[in-house]
Image 1 (cartoon, rainbow, N blue to C red):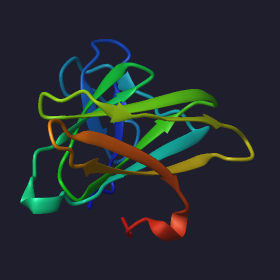
Image 2 (cartoon, rainbow, N blue to C red):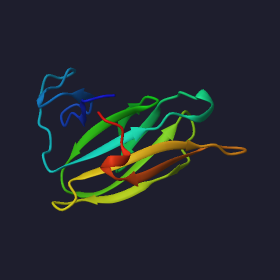
Image 3 (cartoon, rainbow, N blue to C red):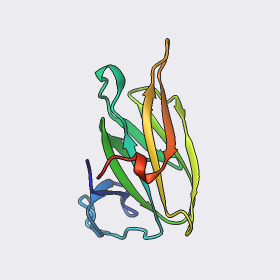
Image 4 (cartoon, rainbow, N blue to C red):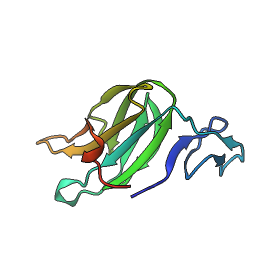
Length: 135
């Protein structure tokens, strides 16, 4: 499990995983982590051993991939968010929409693959902290 925070460099757009504020590994500019809230996503293990990573999109902005049975924390400012995830070439997803507010600073999400006859669907569910694996 990852204890890193995922952020997109505001200067060059590179997605990086960092332990704290620092510099971008590509352009060297400062990375300042928003301190308002966090989106924590756990990608549940896939049935039948399908271990392809899932692409993460927050408000339609790509934020890299999440490996099978892994977690990531994404620091964000207060606001409204829509999380979409893809699996391989499949973009079919039941998105999660929510607000990060002073009353709800951390949102916990679990993503899993729902197997279909013709196509598979990524399902993202909002859960509570006790339903998440430890980081």
